[in-house]
Image 1: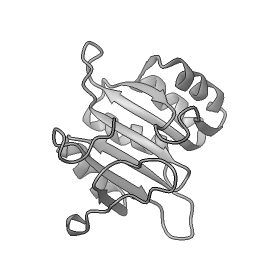
Image 2: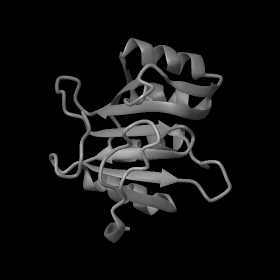
Image 3: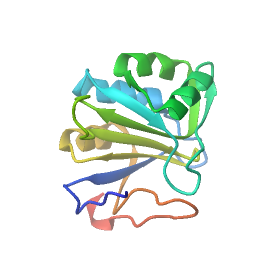
Length: 160
């Protein structure tokens, strides 16, 4: 299911690195920032929905553990994810879905790594959106999350 801005106020931001440089940030940066807003977040790691549904890819010392978590679908604490993220060099493809209450299906925030090209942050929490815009340099609002394949998406040009 793809969420757009029209569905429950959910918005999508794409975060790019500097031109001609790799992204410059990774999941550890996002987890660290998001923890400042919501220290008790539970995360579920998975492949990114789209045309590569079974594919999660990361490099570094904790990449195998992250890949196992992506296959199992089990929740981990924000603290555990932060530790794994510190030992991760790069997440190439992956989705991290944050919940503030394990007894609710409600998603607080989703962070996606898309082919080392950009990260997406999907949420209805205006505090998260503000934090991303203030921390990262190249933040672009999009109509909807990445849809797979060569989907460039549709930027929201009047909201930069």
